[in-house]
Length: 303
Image 1: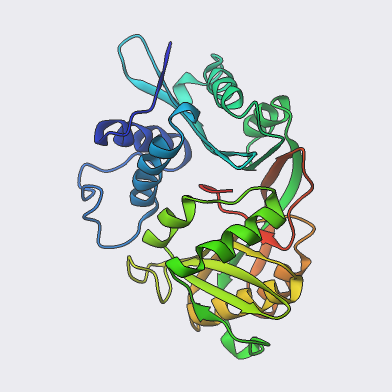
Image 2 (image 1 turned 120 degrees about the vertical axis):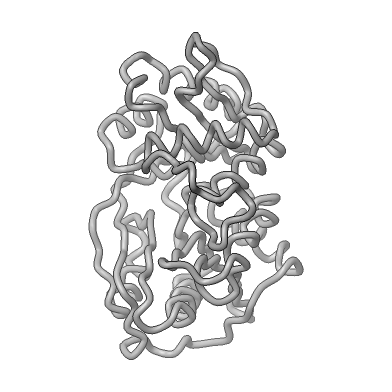
């Protein structure tokens, strides 16, 4: 087995997509449109751009594992953001599991984040993933997922102004990130708007932001499922305001998914349940050197 850095190239991004889809979803079809030409912001297309983004910002945290024939069998993507290390993706082909591939990849990613006091990752509901991340020193906090179709009739009106965000809100979002997770997402706030609309709130009581994919403001157009990609605020009241506005923007009857809710995010459960969404257990939020950020909804690619 050979480990090598993921390069900022189309073929490497496609290799990452192949491994991730085969390990986590389903193998890509030959009829799939090439990245960049997809009519909708499909997860595979997002992953392609996400890979290119991280190989530019964090080349030392992105590694591919190849077999003796040069075929990709595993991948890890990770990032450092102001002293906070984030594990974005760890995937190994089913036929390569049990051979130490995942452990070797994670070791490289951990070495990249060695100088970071804090770490965060969304860990999928798989015993191998839990075991690997626990051995890596992450505390596993059980997470809840909310899914279902939105009932806007049962949602209250937001208790304050929520507006469409833009590049001018970067300082606001970085400030919220530092307060919640000890490090700003920084350049990730340049990549996320490619695939998700941005909502912000800012008043005398504080500020917050929320990315929403598949709904109004999504540059890729409306998709089959709306996702709350990332949400952070300086208070639960403002977070509730943002999530209420986001679900209202998703629209009546739209399918919505919200991942990574730890026990500290009861405010999010209250909003989701009021909108008719259903909760179920869905993996863990892995943390190192920090308590669960709150009020906060992490993003799997940019935790």
